[in-house]
Image 1 (spheres, rainbow, N blue to C red):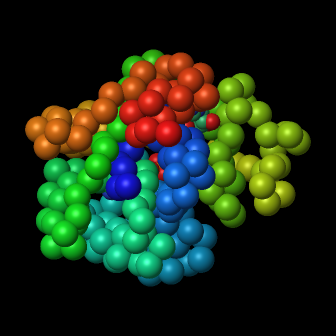
Image 2 (image 1 turned 90 degrees about the vertical axis):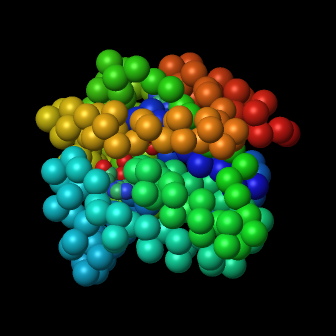
Length: 214
Ligand code: ADP
Ligand code: AMP
């Protein structure tokens, strides 16, 4: 099963993608996590991506598309995958459609997690991230067992630089301009599924499971 998570930054795509990956036993592929891992490891790709990410913009398609297409051809994606944060532009979506077609495959579901901008600002200012293992928490809605420490790997949690309010505003503008048009793109191909992302995390997940099937 090949699934795409659509939605604004902070809508809960990553939270739901991790739950989907666990239930359906498919890899969770987050382009944001791949970029952050590259930044942490000081790679050339990471250095290129960092400036765009810190400014709240998108990493250019020339860098992002090849990276993602390589990843989905790895062996662990044979049974499917859940893509989180990709595609974010129409050229990314078109490249993905074409690459999958060449492999004799296609996207089964594009799940749009719908959350209004007001709630996004609240969610992102409270998000705390583990840059070591990619886990995310929220200071109100998903509190770690020990404040500031990752439940999964014990590393320190941080407020991501790009989750600071001034950058969030810019990221939302970029979302509305470049990523929101993907809702129509996937509606036209008949795979769009809409979910109300304002419910609590478990209710959102149950709504997604009703769409994907048990
Ligand atoms: P995205 O991957 O779309 O950027 P995340 O999954 O990281 O978003 O969620 C953003 C923040 O909101 C995180 O701190 C997360 O714990 C929290 N969150 C996610 N889903 C919900 C929800 N349904 N209700 C409240 N908070 C949520
Ligand atoms: P995320 O973790 O999904 O919120 O992504 C964090 C940042 O990484 C984004 O604000 C972008 O700068 C960059 N990024 C992640 N995925 C993409 C993508 N598909 N295209 C371009 N930039 C991306």
